[in-house]
Image 1 (tube, helix red, strand yellow):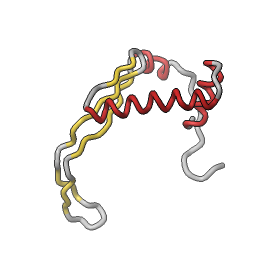
Image 2: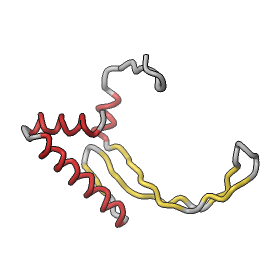
Image 3: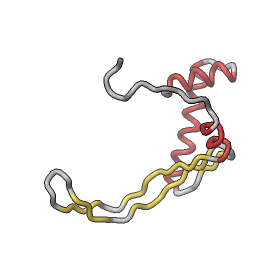
Image 4: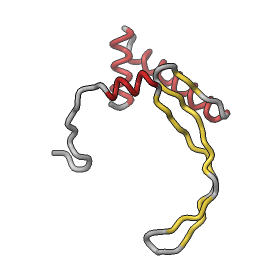
Length: 104
């Protein structure tokens, strides 16, 4: 599912136009993003929690050339699924997905 599919589902389920649903989704995503930029956590009870984490500066081995290189410290976004989401995914019927890459 991509953003367009999600907008259509929101529009259908909430009886909104696609434009209204897109604005609502954009408002939610903008709210989550701005909260993470400020360093706040965003918790949607049952669904999950969005937060940021700090990766320390570290040395890594470059597999192509064999030498070491320095990776700068950085902040990254994290998502931890809530219990309702975990259970929904765990108990969902198994779906066979086509392998990634070339279409079949």
